[in-house]
Image 1 (cartoon, rainbow, N blue to C red):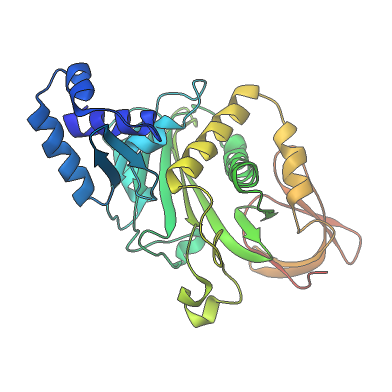
Image 2 (spheres, rainbow, N blue to C red; image 1 turned 180 degrees about the vertical axis):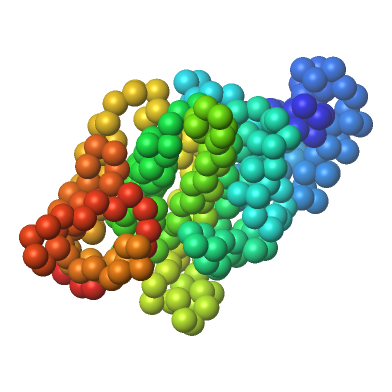
Length: 323
């Protein structure tokens, strides 16, 4: 950890109280000059730091930082190897490259801006510098392909629960990978697997997400203003992105650690697809029916007009009506 990073951690841990430069110098075994230089660098990066005769005081801001995320991670959450980028063409690509390079499990790539964001089927989505959370994580589960869908669902539950617990904002889930607020999309999730051909086991899973955090409604392109929104589209954020990021991963790993399917009950309760008429295409053929339930494997069960059932494990589902 660099001197600057250590100082930022100390300031955040002490906040809102002051900590003197002398105390920081003693704790870190560096000179007062090194403290002063690092404080100035942090201020240039946008961190709000008050200084007076009592020392230095950190003021909360929405600047992404590894230190700010780590401060809010639970003790039970596994050690994350966090890579923070000012911008990225795709954090999914970054995480997949990390997998190919043999980097550790639980490597988390976060970008302040995603230049070429893409979701399912390669569709682009709107990103805003400083207004969203764009991140992907590398996991090494060594599990079978049948368990792949669970990761997307667990991630959706973790995001929804974290948002509601930290902000009080009510969310809903559209099977299989979208989070909504007020019937407008605020988050998309994408999971991709890398496997060992001989064993048939999944060696790596990369889960990526884009969360609209504090984008004003008028900032969205006009063609999606009626479809998309952000957590804080019409008010000031009540927490930082660092805090929400930590809350999401705390919840995600807590669900994994439980090793049961309780999260599916939450997912079903939050689904606004169940009980609704849906249209979808399977093997090139369009179908129409009523979404009945989500099974233990995370698959969507749809009852067609003729009374037969279709089981959807992936693919596009669009609602023909919302009531």
